[in-house]
Image 1 (cartoon, rainbow, N blue to C red):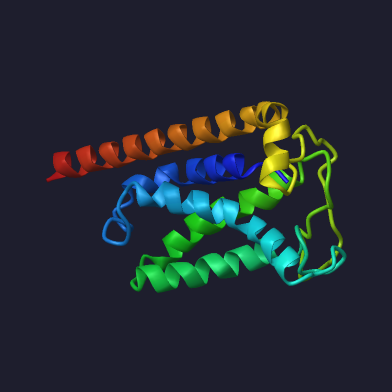
Image 2 (image 1 turned 120 degrees about the vertical axis):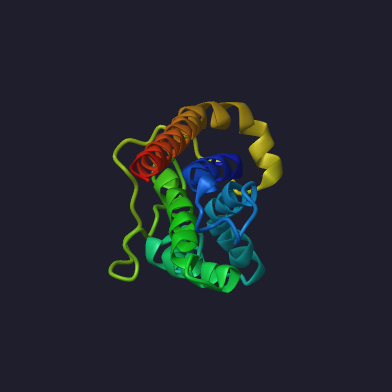
Length: 190
């Protein structure tokens, strides 16, 4: 798996354009949009804790990188959570933001150089997959083991963190410029 740090950073970066959304204004504080998206992006690795606590075999669909890493599950989970949190017409937008952030998780895991593959196509297939290009050093499951290799792991993830942050900031600025241009057009026509 990629580290929880990178999962959080990439997920939060994906949500940056939604910070200025009028539809989400009354639902969450601005700062909470990227924070909750980052948490949604890191959350699929909770399957590791469940796997060990419940003694789930690594070959099970409920094991690490199984069903809880599938986009189908992540979309449904994000939609349910957003409907509970938003309780108004803006829940689909919040669900889309959280789902997009969460789906970055299995995609990043498919770029790692170890572990089991990801059930990306579940429920249509139980095949575990990786991308052909796997530049990210796999992060160990244990926190103490992570710190033994943190430098190399974080260095391999840094380009993906930087790219996600650049895209999130650029898209946020672009959307802001579009909103300002639209508002200027409306005020000129009035």
